[in-house]
Length: 332
Ligand code: UFG
Image (cartoon, rainbow, N blue to C red; front, side):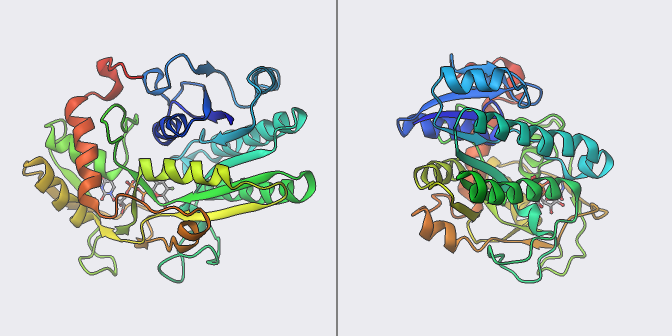
């Protein structure tokens, strides 16, 4: 299929592009490069533009004979979404609706959407199934939920076939070490810990150790970014007009902040000083996926089932690219 990947120069999108490419799809990357990296995009496949551009997007959809859109482009910082919700609603909702309108105009009706565990808020039961209530606790989660609802309605009224894939904690770097995680500012746990190992930060601050969890630190479900990519390919191949696939993408294994730090110490051989700090507002104590539905429906099994190989892959990237893409890494 001919696939347009929005946000294909970003962290999850760039990994998915390579997996789509390997699976034999013809992939086009569409990215503003505001947060994405030119070097992360597939070579000679990058189109720089805004999602809401009602001239350029239809032109690309037609010229490249696009069959399906994978939509990764979004702002994804929870704290920022609380401080500046307009930025999130404009980009994640308004721009996405414009993208969907361009698709309708060009009769492209297959859509794979990056959703999030943040649509569940603070869930009542653990692990989280797709039947769990979706009650986001921040604007970021709401923007993703609004688009999920729009997709349900578009499927019903306009025969869209969609997948809304709810990621738990995307982590790790490509198995070959070619691409990895590089956010500015960096807010994610594993890259920050590895920056301590590289001597770029003095210590890791643990955001609270008084949570109701066995070691008092927050528990998350870390899912390797290549496993997210392979789930996208499987979802794409199963899209049907008028139907939606809504699925959790996680491993089903919870790992605490302290366990992640310990894995990073073992993998890097560095001491990695850690200090207990205040809780970060808005962090649920535990988020772990029940991913049975995704595994069954998509016939998908994550390859990375524990934290250690995830950290190993991330460390390969960070050690080789201590300044991320700023080192001028060239990949294809
Ligand atoms: N943490 C620390 N110290 C740090 C950074 C993080 O202790 O310096 C802790 C956090 O408190 C959290 C865990 O490490 O308990 C993971 O934090 P991340 O920021 O890496 O990831 P989150 O779980 O907060 O966020 C992820 C995605 C978001 C998504 C959210 C859903 O990155 O996009 O899950 O809740 F919205």
